[in-house]
Image (cartoon, rainbow, N blue to C red; front, side, top):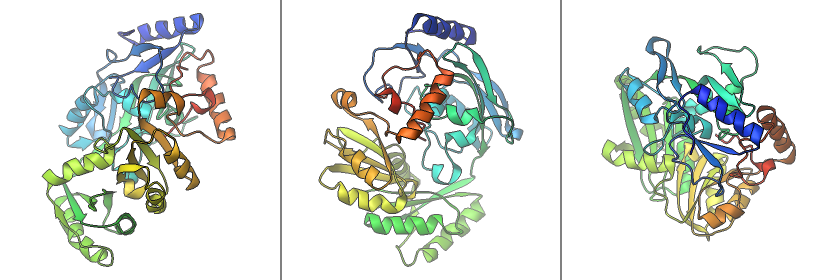
Length: 378
């Protein structure tokens, strides 16, 4: 394992690999190393390139080095009454560079946007061993190509990010979960769609196979109380709502957001039009062991013991996408982790990737066939 101490070390490592035809795999905390096919590339650990570069709470802008632990960043902004609005998540050791590179976003994504929507700029090293700067440390920036959008969700295939500038937002003063019980998924979708489309400003909506449907209401306390009082009336035709205690709600939100508690040896992460969620689960009933729904029905974690790509096939038939989030090594060798793109899109992504990495330094075999490797899934 290579452990660059700074940007100069990293440039030397990547330049040498390009000259010698070696392959490198970028890693933060290594918390998602089991995602994708097993591979034997040399690891470049970014954890020593860490620390806060600049934080201006008044301007809602934070610049940090890519190896900075996510937990440290969340503690820093929380101390100023702020938050990362796209609600990133990860296990112990997760770094902000890994979060952005993987395009990780939590339950609030359905209203606040994804990691790329809050990435203002970055500094990175391409596969040529050249440093480049993309974006700027301002919220409004329309100069040139929006390269940060490419870096978010690229899984380290375009370059090694060393500094990341993020937009932060004020943290809600109060958060309440309103819940309904005993709803089938089609009824749950109707209730979530009604709530998200209402003037109650619901920030997240999730459903679980227990029949629990959860709606998150956040903001200033008087506003939260008024909206929570109004929601039961708005959803009269769909379900009965009542507040859920935070101690009960927190693990349920965590499961819906991460899929970590979904049972089964194989876990799929499906993105689909919310109206099709119930149809997908009905079609997959013989395969499914467990599931959890987030983003108002737009994300479905599916747990199964079936070592096949039936979930991906069913999702594609409903114009959705499925990525293989967890599976035994043998299955990960056979089935690509990321949903294959249409041929034209795949060729375009290939051309973009090669512009950044002509020597294929970052092509590790992690995502199967090269034409299907350049997925910006977030």
